[in-house]
Length: 208
Image 1 (cartoon, one colour):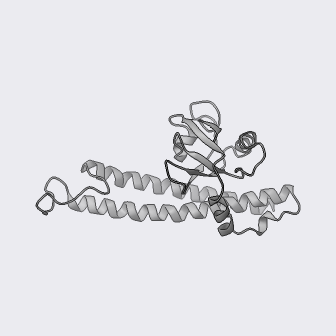
Image 2 (cartoon, rainbow, N blue to C red):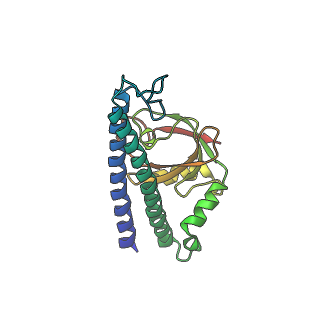
Image 3 (cartoon, rainbow, N blue to C red):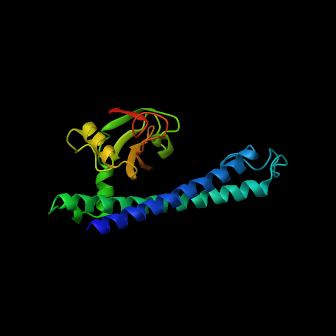
């Protein structure tokens, strides 16, 4: 079981590397758009309906197409990472609890259950260059799932803190509600030391 757990963690780490590479590619394409001073939704024709002469249309269209493709790839990759981490955490739980019914739940069932959960915490601040910032957490995010912690967990914030300590240098799936939306945004957070500030996360989390 330990070997299987290690293999799953290695798989998750390999997927995380792919995620970093995808994010770097997306940033390059976004830089191409910024060089033309346009975004994903700016008009490419002038007021008379002719192609704009102030931008390189080939660069813009290519960058937009690549960004859409890469973001679709990222969505599929995030699902693979979540599944690998979910399986690894289930094995970790099975190692400490000989019989558990949690393993019978499918990823689909769990996703449906997560959507019905209320937020249990809120991100009050995020430090620059921190693991939290790197993961994409922003101030105001409402945390619904933090690894194995959710609103049904006893003593949520102390349990979250203990979970972070146990997952140093290991990826954690964090799911948040952002802004007015109740849709879940999935993020991958890796707690670590040595990022230039205090703690493993670099963010302040308060009760929801």
